Length: 155
Ligand code: PNS
Image (cartoon, rainbow, N blue to C red; front, side):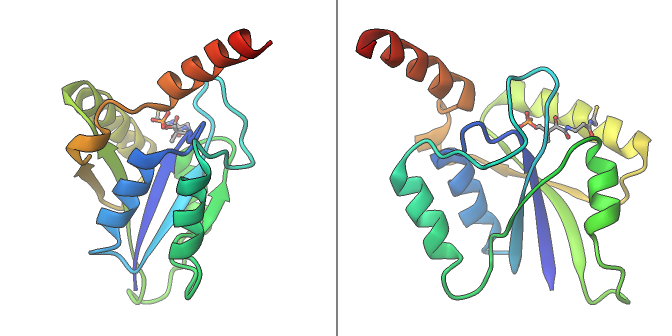
C-alpha cells in the first residue's frame, strides 16, 4: 500500500489542499492529512477547520467508502511524528511526504524544509504536486485575513 503523508498547518483547510489530495490519490492509496504546528503561523493543532462547507463535504465523500484520507494532528517535529506513525512491515507499506507547490516562493520554502527534515533524519522521499492553476492564489493566510475583515464589517 502506498501512503502519502501530507503535512501542513491547514488553518483553514481549503480548495487548494483538497486539489493536492485528489491529485495524490491518483498515485497513492491513502493520503494522511497531518496537521502540525508551524511556530511562525497562528494555528491550533486540532481540530481541522475548513474554508467552506463544500470543501468539508468533498473530503467527507472521499472518506465515505474507505478511509482514504484520514486526519491526524501532531505536536513537535515532523520527523518524530513520521517515525511514530509509519508501520514497519517488510516493505508492504510504502511512504512518502507530499507537499503542494503554488509558485516559486513555495518551491524555495519547501526545498529548505525538506533539507532541514532530511538533516533531522527523515528518510522517506518527498514528492511535490503543482497546484491546479485555479487554486494558485488561494492561501490559508489570505482566507484568515478576509475572515477578519468580515468580522469587522459584521460586528
Ligand atoms: O508549510 P506549512 O503548511 O505551514 O507546514 C506546517 C508544518 C506543521 C508541516 C511544519 O511547520 C512542520 O513540519 N512543523 C513541525 C516542526 C518541524 O518538524 N520542523 C522541521 C523543519 S525546520
